[in-house]
Length: 175
Image (cartoon, rainbow, N blue to C red; front, side, top):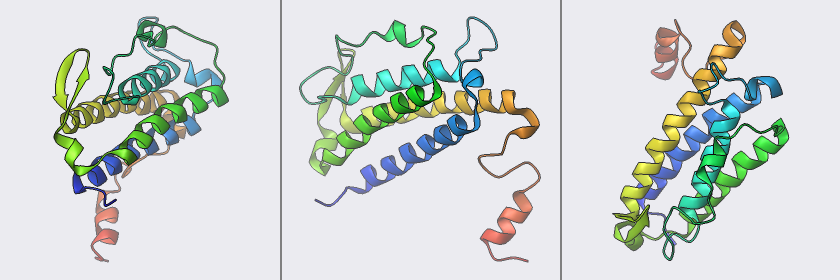
């Protein structure tokens, strides 16, 4: 089955944000994963719990069930836990596995079919856009928290400050 261009593009973007999250998780210690600027703020660990819960709920049985599953307990995703780094990484991967597995099964014709999320009908293509924005938002939070904690030890996940000219010279073959 040939993958429709939209799905290829969406998959590429989901993978790009997953990679940013992966790199952030790798850079942080156990303690840093659970650090919160304030008790009302999310830690990286809480964001991982939330994203994994969201992915599993949204992308399991998309054609036959609402994306907000009765078994999902969203509020517990924001409850502080003592999951260690290995458990958080496994949880992170499990959510992405559900998303990517579901994406592998989608055909071009299905992109315009309706699914439901919280009893709202939307096309699968619209749902993919919605979730891509949602995951990018939270991965951005994870990266920012990582950067706040690691300070000078943070390795830029994109073009580092002051590096644009050199990056562009290399990219466009300009010496």
